[in-house]
Amino acid sequence: MLPQDQQKLDKLYQSMVKALKRQGMSDVTIDTYSRAITRIARFFDRCPDELGKQDLKDYFDHFVTIRSWGTVRADRCGLQFFWKYVLNKKWKWVDIVKPPQVRPIPDVLTVAETEKAINSVRELRYRIFLFTLYSMGMRLGECLSLKVSDIDSQKMQVHIRNGKGRKDRLVPLPQATLKALRFYWKTHQNPVMIFPNLRGSEQTIRNSVGHMHYQGPQQALKGALKDCGISKRITIHSLRHSFATHLVESGVQLRLIQELLGHEDPKTTLLYTQISDVAAQNRTREVNNLINRVRLSFIEK
Image 1 (cartoon, one colour):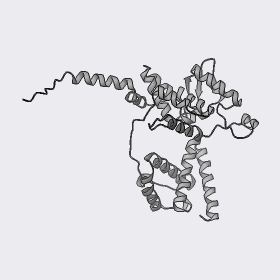
Image 2 (tube, one colour; image 1 turned 135 degrees about the vertical axis):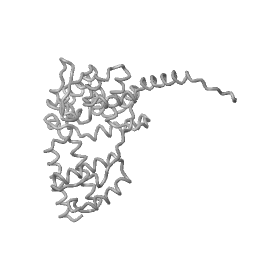
Image 3 (cartoon, helix red, strand yellow; image 1 turned 180 degrees about the vertical axis):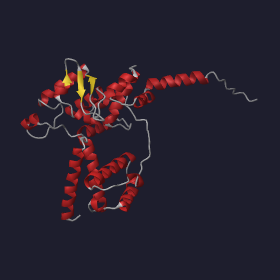
Image 4 (tube, helix red, strand yellow; image 1 turned 135 degrees about the horizontal axis):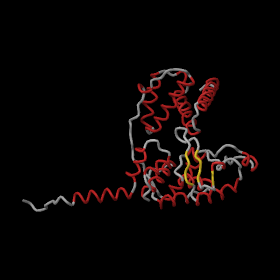
């Protein structure tokens, strides 16, 4: 790409980031959607504002063969946003690429595996971050954005702000989590953020109002899982799934789990009854009770 084209791409990229911020997107969404612009620019070696519908079709013809449908969906949404809010053009994305509606059952960790994986994380900040996220069933962005003022040690609850759908919720604060957070906070003593950006001098860190980068804990968990020999398809969001599944196995009512996780639709929470080992055992027992009533003869007639 020529220098003048690279400068143009940089301006378009900045316009994209500003538009995403104006729409109230999370940091993770901003990063994910913005990558779609640089990725397609590299593919064609020219600015994406010069591309037409056939170019987009050619791009996705190639992209669906090398990436997961989750990544394809993210790029589709990112490019759709770019066309609408940056280029002010209409783009019927359904005509270009339509990822299948798949509802996979996610992999989860057992309680023992969760403990092993988290304790295998080498850096203290990431170990405590992942424990905090798991212990309150939080999403990645929710945990990153935690502030000191969100922690109520008197009522032993945490105010989670701007969750999915821009909704707040209150969740119980486990004693063990409070102890871990207090221990970690003493290492940086930032008056605002629980998990501040740790780049710069000690004074810079203490005055920071930004949180750590989301890729840090993701890579830390990935390395810990490898060290533990856990081959399940686990991401940070899997810790939230694991938390909910462990609550089901502990006998917690689905309605309470729905409130803890901030699910709007109770059907979403029902997923964890499919994953739970206890539920699986119950299903197996009931199926066996039924089938045992049907006698199969092994004697030839």
